[in-house]
Image 1 (cartoon, one colour):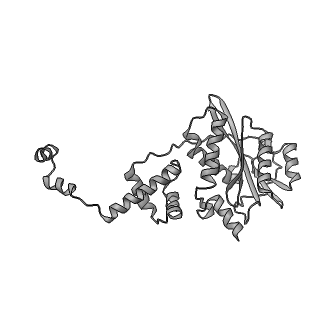
Image 2 (tube, rainbow, N blue to C red):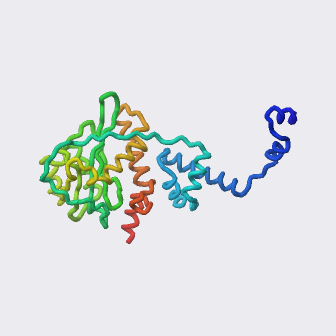
Image 3 (tube, rainbow, N blue to C red):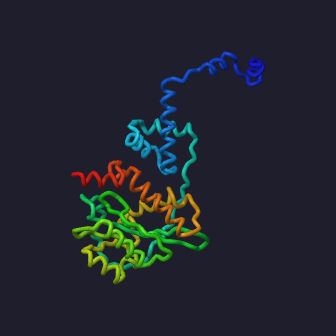
Length: 275
């Protein structure tokens, strides 16, 4: 039987018996263990992370130090499906109020929390020609999303309620810079009044120049790549649940951030307040 099978498959009998009696090497056993850990991280992150981030989490959560090259080779043998990647569209307000000051001036690394907050909107489809809008506020010190809110309208009320949420959560005790683009929502009388009442200084990007608010732009870019563009939404409630899982569970609490020397935003703030 074996002789016939080997002849049909054109395999030497010696090769067959060698494979049959093969004992996994130490390297093989290590690779099996590492593949299991990589798969756990891959599933935990919902296919959002590449080799560099997986390397950080292996060391952080499992005490395993591997090179990016070895992780890449192991993942290649696992034939893991890649995450979807779609280029998000730019949905910016095209106003041109030249007199608005840019206080931030691309200084993206403040020395402490509650010195600089940045904000922006993005849109999320929930059906043919139907959208909801996410407003998010980040603290540049840790890159943490400190407030976020979803609404069917992209208006000043959405900006106001998100800022109120940030103020309630952070309770800033000193003046801080609040940086946004030139959107009309951030220039209404009601919004400026809220800033003034809380000793917050408004700062604006140059018209049509997203680099002035690049940290927030990058946050939305990866939100779209890792979460939004991989799903189809039918209601604002579905978007709310998806954003909660991504922002609160994954981004703030699990994802190593390169600007934080691979600490998560929550870890960066915990480290600061320990001092």
